[in-house]
Length: 328
Ligand code: AMP
Ligand code: MG
Image (tube, rainbow, N blue to C red):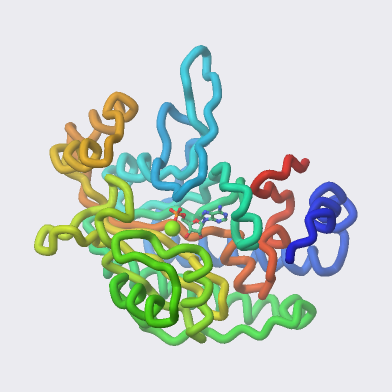
């Protein structure tokens, strides 16, 4: 059971905690993670861009979390829950892009217990023009293996202090279709459904069954948003994926190919009951034409949590904001 008063001490007395060797070790590893992500992507020809923080509309696909609205000179604006809608704009110009993008999501209070939900976090968000979801997965696993190698090499002392032994994962990672993941979980008695995202407790159970990171792919259409591309040859299946960390750490990455044709997106929005008026600039952009693309987001704090072997994600960020707790 989580001790709420202990969590609050940890958050409200951060100025003490942040000076402790444990927190210093974690932040040094996080610095290595950030520089190795950047080095890897630059080596692959990616261009880093600055992420927007606010806009008239943001990512609607945030699984039960709430978006934050602000008054922007009399207009209703949102704080980015993710920059997904902007990625298609810039990838059409630069081809391969990434950003370390800040996200705010008011996650439900009960998600505190998962120990992997923050209400403010950062994603390394990337997008590749003309790529398939398989190519994006290939890049994702090479990127993770590179980061693990660099952290092992350059943060030996910090990892030892944290008692974390890390192994560089073998490539390629195992790929499990969503349907098979659901079958496996059903056979173990978990309450999971074919047409939905895998619930948090089942995700941890699945993650605990493996010693290496693995992919879940081919998500059902009904599980996700209008921007995930439906397979033209397999109606009802999205060309989409998640990467799951092993050892019970749960989801690392979500991504896929994008629905990029104006008419298709309109149809998907209508069938979901989205209000088209909210997406003015985005739809104008699609009408003008964007490149087909694929990409993903990897949570930086979750990556830090996994590499450092931390139980609690609020140790993986210097100034954490947690579901339901108004901390500094
Ligand atoms: P999503 O598009 O919602 O799957 O988010 C992309 C990635 O961001 C996830 O795979 C996680 O690594 C990370 N992420 C999403 N929500 C949170 C959260 N509430 N706290 C920390 N990391 C998150
Ligand atoms: Mg996800």
